[in-house]
Image (cartoon, one colour):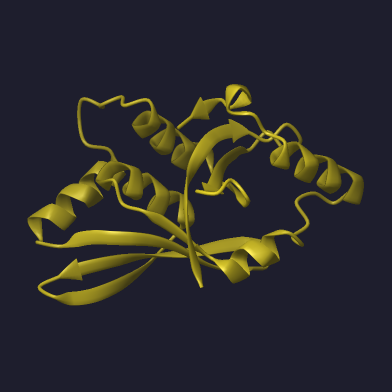
Length: 160
């Protein structure tokens, strides 16, 4: 089953200093942190802040390619979590045909922001994410999980 989620914010993990995209469901019952690279975080942050670069960035190029090829991004799906790595795909539609394209979640999210496309997460990913070791120490993992669950939008580096 797929759950629609939106971006709650983009922030820096206080333990690892890596960027995290925080996804949240509409009922505010589920939160999914996805660690991303700095370049991908920048692409997401630029769009959250509505900053238009002077020339198209990679995700802008992808959006332009979709338009020029007559394809529409219908949704982004975070579909799996294996060995602490999230997997996603783009669901495109072109000429009545559905096309699934493998993508990193960070790229899929950056593209979804540029196309105002919904983001969905498979419920099995939400369940698996609860048991993933974020750090090597259990105490840090539990502290981070409590912190993520208690986030206030005012504490976010970038909020939606």
